[in-house]
Image (tube, rainbow, N blue to C red; front, top):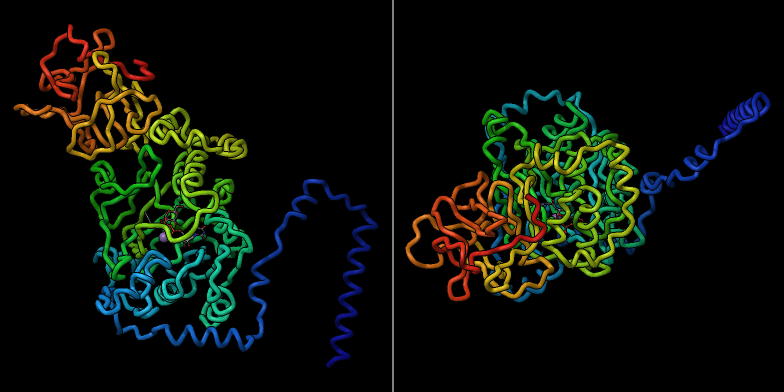
Length: 579
Ligand code: LR7
Ligand code: MN
């Protein structure tokens, strides 16, 4: 046998030699600089490194055994069927201690089986639709999960839910990117554990904290599947979740599709379904926010609640995208750090550069929502978040970035870094502008498409500025010294006559009987008369047509009053006014 192998090898060698000789003699092979660069830049294949079987060393085996002793696989136990777990008061102290580790009830999570059962939450229409998919024709997917110091049980529950509830042939692999965690169980014991799973799982341990954006790019670069599917590391997928997502991407590779993101309670780990009439938007702070799907989108879907929702933005953590399309439109902005901002960036980019963003109501995935972040932000939390958001604003928002900088003045002092590369991308892809996006995709946005002012509003009688004072809906805004930096004094007079600060609108009471007659209210999706004012730049009066009163001051506070064009307290000017 050895002899035979040697002979075969010898022959192959000769063949290779001939081939090389042949090539070099016939035409002296000149590699262009571009080709060479491309060749040199090919990353070492971490995929291959990950599948090389390591022998288990006894220490790892022992560590894993220890972990597994405290890992429940009894899917009929606590938390089964998606129920919550109540911790006995005697364990209160321990529970509170453990909560800090990941900012969720780790004690509860550890009691619940990593393969717990969940109800099938889909509507009957979704369940019927499921049978119409041609499962054998759907593309395969590489699931990419990035994590930094994730808890063992939530991470395993993520993996087991995927394996238990996805058609095997659609799963090319699961790729896990460990973003430089410092917990030992996420190293060799985890590597060892995933080898036992019935599907290929590849783990890359980054030696430097890269942040979730660059960590995901490490994952997407090694993915073999046709569709990339990003997930957070603390989710549970439910019955039938995968085919609806793949089916949409298969139908048109320009669709980027998210599931409905249900809530896994950070307190009890109860699985709570979210509304199927919610979509993604954003506010002046450039925070991602959930809002009710407006009537026009319900109508476009012909009121079919199993049909995909075209959403202005996605939350960012859970979505399927065709690998080629993801690359074509510029993956992610590698200049973004740690956490935040990438969700709006990819949302604007997908819409403006010819794609579609959808939420598929027949696919449900639970996610552990936290009130606080559990990990560090190297560089400082606010600085990192402002840096990322500013990059999004600088590249994609054109003149509308003013709303962000007015609302978050601190972002002006943060270095957004070099964005020329990303602007060139926008140029090369010939993407539409932000006005197009607001007009066609998100006319309901808190950032108004048509506005006549953005900045402070000064009262001439008092020489003071309108200030939300950080108050909420239902309260009256204040009138204080103008500081000119925006924030609580950032307002916009919109073309349709509303005076808004982010999501709050000045509202004149219609049945005025004493009081100030004016307050702030959540702006209505369709402008209503109590929010509509008329500004006359000559008299500088702000009149409210439906009550026929004017914005004024009464004993230093804001109030509606009978219009009087001689009263300086009724004279206002709006910063950056352009009629
Ligand atoms: O430095 C980091 N490195 C990481 O690998 C920081 C985080 N991560 C990992 C982390 O372990 C987790 O698996 O990245 C993933 C997301 O981080 P989370 O869970 O702290 O984020 P989140 O759920 O609070 O926030 C949402 O917004 C983020 C903005 O950057 C990301 O897009 C998250 O993926 C996103 N999560 C969702 O969309 C789930 C629904 C939440 C909502 C709304
Ligand atoms: Mn998350």
